[in-house]
Amino acid sequence: MKLQFLRFALLVSLSACSGDSASVSDAAPGGQHDATIVIDEESRVAQYIRSTQYTKMVLEIDSVPGFEPRAGAQTQLLAQLDSILDKPQGISVVNDGTLVSLGEDHAWTDAELFALADETFDLAVDEDTIKMHVLFVDGSSARDTNSGRILGLAWANTHLVMFKQSIEDTCSGGVTPPLLREPLCEGAEFSIWLHEVGHLLGLVNTGLPMVNDHQDEEHGAHDVSDACVMYWAYEGEAAVDLLRDRLVGGNEDALEFDAECLADVAAVRNAP
Image 1 (cartoon, helix red, strand yellow):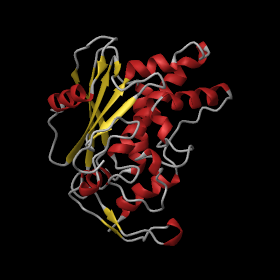
Image 2: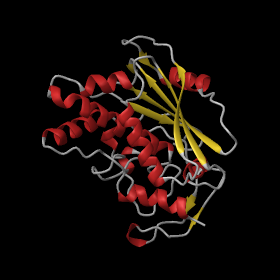
Image 3: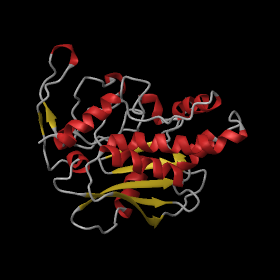
């Protein structure tokens, strides 16, 4: 997970990091970090969060026909980013390209995804705009196992992929009451997408310094709290299961960043 772009499946989190990041002093006793944060303005993490170099952000979306993002999930994601990032000229989405379907039975390898991302990350933007690349694909991940499916993947602080067909299959399964399928699928898509964006922003402790220690080191770039969307299990089917249980119980709350993750972003955003 360092800058050498060690590309793990999201079960251990794909993120480029520490050499391309802001830095923080060593932790003080009790897990509280020193409040002084030194910002590397050239790091992509800082460029996403701050307005020093880029005052606008664009999410460049390339998708397989029929597997485009839900409007509701997209709206929620933009609202979340707008509330935590310093982009005074706005954050927007551009549906840029159409991806060729490889079929519902295709299992995407890491190599295929990395090549696809490199080939399609081509939207022209103004000099004051930074891009984040989002792929929506059919098929599934070649890293799926009998223990669970991977629903999203992020790497190099730049690209993420949403395995939309796997998300749809998971959220619309037979155990979901028919009236709850659409709100569940929308909520699941938003939360998985936010989880992946969190990794691109350097969460947890992979490019974005921690104000307080909240990394689940056993599970890599993830939060120790199961109340946070960055909890390790929420990159896959566990997020859908939790959201389903909430909906059945009358709770429509989405899985979002917790206070610790928000504090990490705010510390970089607000640093002098």
